[in-house]
Each structure stands twice: as C-alpha cells, then as structure tokens.
Image (tube, rainbow, N blue to C red; front, side):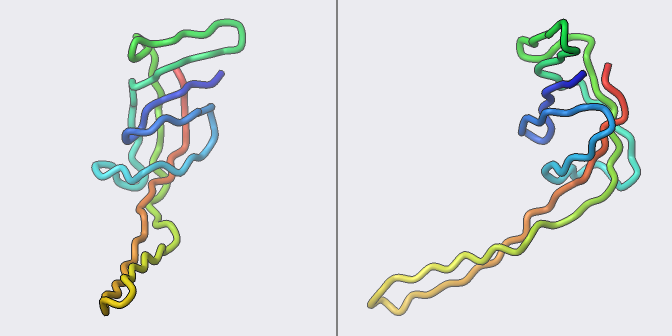
Length: 103
C-alpha cells in the first residue's frame, strides 16, 4: 500500500516504514508523532482512491526523526566592467520523517 501525500507544500510518495527527507516542519520537534490527512491518492494494488482534492477518511501517521541541513550552496553574481561582485550562501533545512501507519 502506498499514498501520495502533500507535506509542506510538496507531494511525496510514501509507504509504511520508509524514512523520507522533507522540507522543514517548523512546528514539529524531534520525536513528535503527527497525523496528516492531506492524502491525494491511496492505492493498495487492487483499489485506488483519488481525492478531489483530498481522499476523505485517509491519513498517515508520521514521526519526526531529526532536523537537518542540506549542503551549502554558494551563489556568485558579477557584472563585468561595473565593479559589482556578490557572494551569498544558503543551506536548506530539512526534516527526516518516518511513516508509521497508513489509513
């Protein structure tokens, strides 16, 4: 059985027992267990339910394992002959979640 769920504005294909890295969940702390009902599609092989926009009665239970950061990205801008140079860095924050149960 798998579901396609919307988490933090993006869609993820989730199955029971897998660990996924999603965009940072601000309200959740490490070790928190959450119930999400933003399931767009649910399939068990023989039957597929498609939501409009969400599947009614479907949900997933997740546990937040850790909050991490991605690799540093350097953004360099330069305009020739104008003495303009800028370097900016960015590290995206992520949350690692584990899918405990699918309803």
